[in-house]
Length: 184
Image 1 (tube, rainbow, N blue to C red):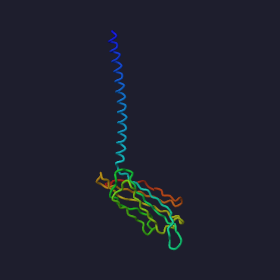
Image 2 (image 1 turned 180 degrees about the vertical axis):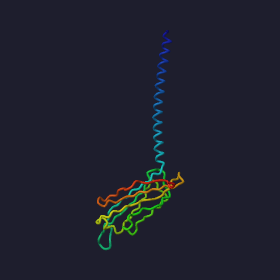
Image 3 (image 1 turned 90 degrees about the horizontal axis):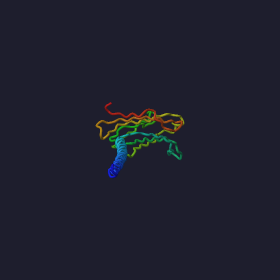
Image 4 (image 1 turned 60 degrees about the vertical axis):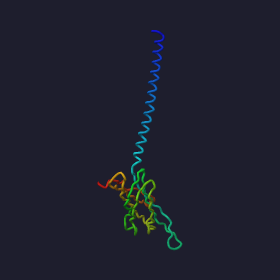
């Protein structure tokens, strides 16, 4: 074979190898971008949902009684939140202080037009709760409400119960979160 033919074969082989390497590199870059876009799409689909939840906190607070003395009363704060980006709407329900005999007012309404990124807080000072801690009275807070999602025609239900542990001064969940469709 002549030198020109060998040179052309070597040149063609080198050019072909460089072309294959370029194709492989382009495929790898494209694959990485596709994986990144798929994961971003998955995250945005998860965020574009309604994920409501609840937290209850109980603290002792000095409340001015009649006269110069302060009494420690229990202050219950119920916080509703939405971890998703899609707002829940038409929240209707209540939270209850159980057993009912502990307080004169034990049912507190929950009525909101929507629950978006900003949490809903309801704080109540429980009248006559000064003796509860001394007597070791246990009480529960039951939160229950219905809400709508713009993409669904039926309302959803949320229910959670919390128990105040008077010995440690903390609130613990005593049952699992129940969220289901109204049809069930």
